Image (cartoon, rainbow over all chains, first blue to last red; front, side, top):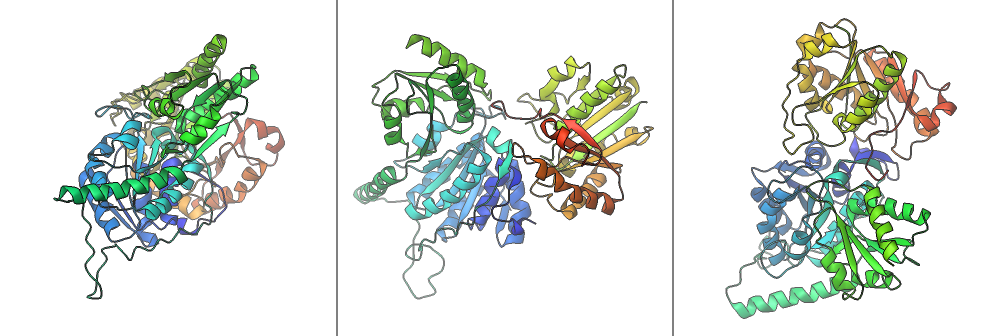
Amino acid sequence: MAENTKSGEKYLMKGNEALAEAAIRAGCKCFFGYPITPQTELAAYMAKQMPKRGGVFLQAESELAAVNMLLGAASSGVRAMTSSSSPGISLKSEGISYMAGSDLPAVIINVQRGGPGLGSIQPSQSDYFQATHAMGHGDFNILVFAPNSVQEMADLAALAFDKADEYRIPAMILADGLLGQMMEPVSFHEIEPAHTDKSGWAANGHKNKRAHHIINSLYLDAPTLEKIVRERYERYAIIESREQRSESYMCEDAEILVVGYGAAARVAKSAVAQARAEGIKAGLFRPITLYPFPKDALREAAAGAKVLLDTELSMGQMIEDVKLAINCSKPVEFYGRTGGVVPTPGEILEKLRELNGGI
Amino acid sequence: MGKVIVITGHYGAGKTNFSINLALALALEQPQARITVCDLDIVNPYFRTADHAELFERHGIKLITPLFANTSLDIPALGFDMAGEAAQSDLLILDVGGDEQGAIALGRYADVLGGAQGLEMLYVVNRCRKLTESPQEALELMYEIEQAARLKHTGVVNNSNLGALTDEETLLRSVQYAEDICREAGLPLRYTAVRSELFDALANKLPCPLKCEVYVKPVWE
């Protein structure tokens, strides 16, 4: 069974399952979920595995219940996770804001589907703004990781737990239905989860030996709340300076720099390789963290480019951060499909040819 | 009623890719035969037989899919006249949804299919597939599927693969695994699915080889 998952051995798994397995291996003890396509295999995997491996799986009565259970479990200092897809994440946004306002580490998975509303059940990246700019009410950020393969689903899930603990902040894996459903080889590395001392804040029983720990996001005194929010923003500044992650592919001499994350980056990578074969000097810059956005590396990768092409499975959301990162110093074009439609590499290639003609 | 082949297995075992290859191979073998492929997957809207309508059409294979398949209304509604489809076909291949949940849809047609002369029900296994990597796990699921489907398997398909990393070693190491499952279940091995690029090197080293292309894959491959 999976408790015998051999480290280094390659398995064929769905992205959703790899997220779940990696979370268990990272020491996740509590999972609270509610079914929704296209993330259900994640919850199903947890339901089968958690009871056998010293954890708790609980299917809540709603997304709201699940996210508040997550808040409760995180308050006690254990590693905990919830997962959903776009409409369910909207329902969870209140709880995520409360967790951010209570400085609680937890991991939230969003296997995005088309929106708005109930939208479609096909892959999408139209929750970028929500994840990175408005994951709930109030002044706050959460860490956002954007895997682009089943292997990275596993690797980033483990990292998300470590970083959430390190900065006492909720962390999200922003995946999409394609990454969740596709099968790829994956191996699990034997990495000891980082141990963060939570004894200073975790509400796990004072046993009459210390003062109560209070987990709270309510501050009726405005100056007190301002002070706490400002302290949190000092932490965000540290996160922004240390935690930007990205990958560059053929960027060194690129005249057209494609920017894409997640599944869109997989499509774009094929298009860039095909464009290179035609002599078009294209490169791909792939953000791996969306918050913090890897603006320093993007600025560097874009230095020699004449034009940028942002590509997303949306109407264009990350493009605003791309423009900000380069301070609008170069034209940034856009190609995207939305509603659950995934572009082919051919569509991106056609756009690259068009841009190449205009250089 | 013609011959009926039912394909079952764990989700992600490669049922759909195998079903497509089997249908194409049999169409090539029997050009006059009326072949119908039925997408009976009501569990998962991704990577399904219904995605390959054009391919089937090109090979003169009839494809039938659940109502609303691949639309936002992808709901588990089945409107098949299975007896009629089977009667009008020389060969009907059913690609069943994953796991025992998927097989519930098959159980709906157990009374029709149970009466078919020459019903074959093939269980697809993949040694590299997490959750069925031991013969015991694969067998447990096989019996769960039989219970939900109210039908018994008649053979095993070894579809062991590691996606793009599949090599000779992947297949050679899977032989014993498939043999163990067959022996425990008392079923014959019907096919070993072999990727076309490995076929020449492996065809005489593997039992019952079937040359297979990879049709089920993401758009960027």
